[in-house]
Amino acid sequence: MKLGRNEECWCHSKKKYKNCHLRIDERLEQLKEQGKLVPGHEIIKNEKQIAGIREAGKLNTEILDRVSEFIKEGISTEEINHLVHEYTISHGGIPAPLGYEGYPKSVCVSIDEVVCHGIPDKNRILKQGEIVNVDVTTILNGYFADASRMFCIGDVGQEKQKLVEFTKECLELGVQAAKPWGYLGDIGYVISQHAYENGYSVVREIGGHGVGLEFHEEPWVSHIGEPNTDMILVPGMIFTIEPMINIGAEDVYEDEKDGWTIRTKDGKPSAQWEYTLLITETGNEILTW
Ligand code: MF3
Ligand code: CO
Ligand code: CO
Image 1 (cartoon, rainbow, N blue to C red):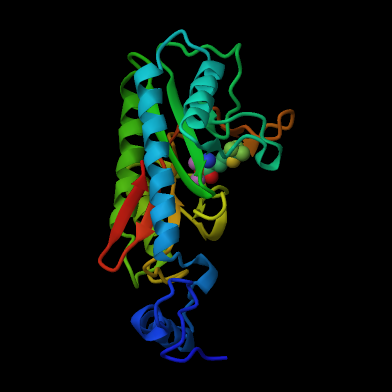
Image 2: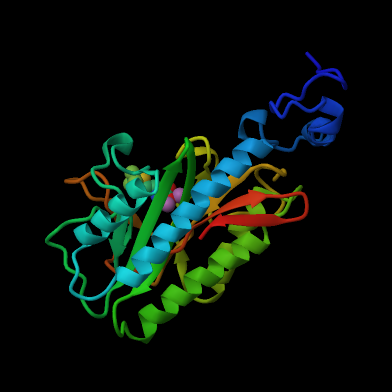
C-alpha cells in the first residue's frame, strides 16, 4: 500500500509525505530493485526521536566525563559502577545495562585481556599499568545512547599505550566512512584494513548495533567488512561503532561462570572505543562519545 503524497508521513512527523520521507523512500525503492540491502522504516528515526536520543547522548557523555575525572589506581571497579549508577539516576536517567538480559550491574568495566562486558566487582582494584574500558549506556525519557572509552592507569608501557590510541584511530576512521547512501560494509572495511596493516587483529563475534529506541537494534555493525556491501546507510539511522582491537589473535571466549565476561583466548590485551552515531543528510553526527 503506497502512501499518498499529501498524506501524513509514516514517521509520525505530522508532515506531509511529500515534504518528509517521500524522496528517501523513492531512492530506497530504486536501490532495492538493484538488489541492495536497504533499511526498514523501523530503524529510521524521526526528528523527535533523534532529539530524544541526542539528549540521552549528552547525559551519557557527561557520565563518561565524570568517570574520567574519578578513575585512578586503587579504586575498585564496583566504585565505578556506583558512580555511574548514582550520577545516572540523579540526572533522571536509567543505566541500561542493569538487568539487561540478566546483567547484574549498571556499567561494563573491562581490563586488559577482557575484551568487553566485564562485570564490576568490589574486590577488583585498578592497578598501575592496566588499560580499562568503561562502557556506559543511558536511557533518558525512553531513549538509549551508548559509548565507551579507554583509560590508562598510570604508565601502561608502550605496547598497551599504542593499542589504546590505535583503537581510537580505528573508530575515527569508521566514523569517516559512515556516510548517507554509503554502505555499512565500508565502515568495517576501513577499520579492519587499518588494523591488519598495523599487525593488530579485530574481534569478529561482537559488533556495533542500531540503538535509540532500544539497547540493541538492527543493523548489526561488523568491524570487518567489504566495501560496497551490507546495508545502505540512510539519514536518520542511528547505530554504534565499537571496534575491539587485539594485540594478539582475534579469538575470544565467554566466561562460563558469569556468562558475560569476554576475554582474548591468548590472554593478550584488547582495547575498545565506542560512539553512537547519527547518519545525517550530509555526513554524520556523533551523539555520544
Ligand atoms: N554496552 C555494550 C554495547 O556496547 C553492551 C553491554 S550489554 C550488558 O553494546 F548487558 F553487558 F550491559
Ligand atoms: Co556500549
Ligand atoms: Co554498543
